[in-house]
Length: 348
Image 1 (cartoon, helix red, strand yellow):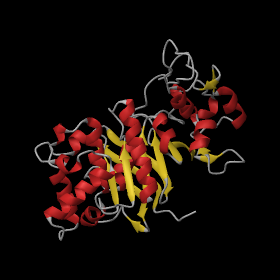
Image 2 (image 1 turned 90 degrees about the vertical axis):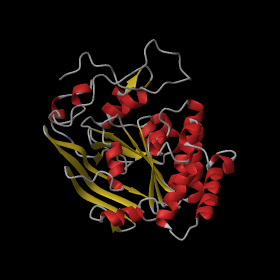
Image 3 (image 1 turned 135 degrees about the horizontal axis):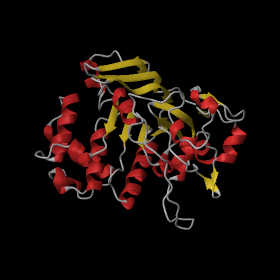
Image 4 (image 1 turned 135 degrees about the vertical axis):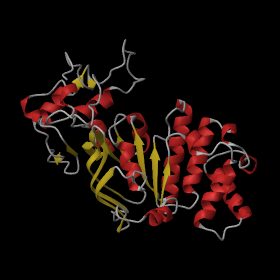
C-alpha cells in the first residue's frame, strides 16, 4: 500500500458567532492515497463541506478557529501562508464545487476563465497555448465540439456540461488531489451517472487521490473505496465500501441506507426517512448527538463513545455506538433489509 498523500489528523473547525461557537468539524481524521476515492457522507450541516474547504484554506476568517493537522505530502497546510495556499490550489489540490453556475463568472467566456487560471500559475503560457490546453481538457471530460465550446458563456452550457467544464478547470494544472463537493447535485439521474463515470475514469487514468462529498449513498456505491459517515461535525462510522454497505454498525448509517430508493423491491407507500432534524451545533444533546432521533437509544447513550473498532475481524471498521455487534445486526433489519425503525416519538 502506498504512503498517504493527504493526512488529516484531529481536524477541528469552529466559528465564533453572537450566540456562541459553532463547532462545525470536531476531531475528523483520515488518510488519502494516490488512486483512492474516499467518500464523506452525511446530511446537510454534518460538516462535510467545511472539512473539504478547510483542506484548501477556504474557511480562514477572523471568526474561524482551526486546530489539528492537514498535511499534503508531508507539508503542513493549517499554518501555511495565504500566498502558499494560493500556489497550492489548482496546482496540487483542486476542488469541484457544488454549483457550477455560480462557480463561473457569467459575463466571461468559459474558455477564457480556465486560461486565466492556468496563466495565474504558469505565466509563461501564452493565451493561444492556454486555449489549446482548454480544448484538450474539454475533450478529456467529454464536452463535444470542444474548439467551438471554449468560446461559449456559462449560460450556453447545460447543467451537465457546466459540471464537466468545472471538472476540466479543476484538472487544468494536473493536481494530485481532487475534491468533488456534491458534484451531481441538481443533475438528472442519467447525467449523474455520466459525471460519476467520468470521475471514476479520471481517477483511474491519472491516479488522482479523490475526496467525494455527498449526502447520497447511492452515489458512493458507484465510485468510493472507503467511506466516512459524518453527523454533527464528527465521524460516526468509517470503513471500506463493502463494510459500510453490507455490515453497517451505526444507526445513523442504517437510516441513510434505508432511505435509498430500491428498484428491486415493491414501491412503498411512503419513502423511508430518518425522523426529526439534525441538532443545532450550538445546542447539542448530552452524549450521542444522534440519540434524540434514534429508536435504539438506551441509558448508556448519555455518554458519547469513541470512534473505535468493535469488530474483531475488521480492525479498520470503526464506529460510535454502544450497541454490541450482535444487537446491531439484529436491530438494523427492518422489513427484511437494513434500515432504521421509526421511533414512536422524537425526543427534544
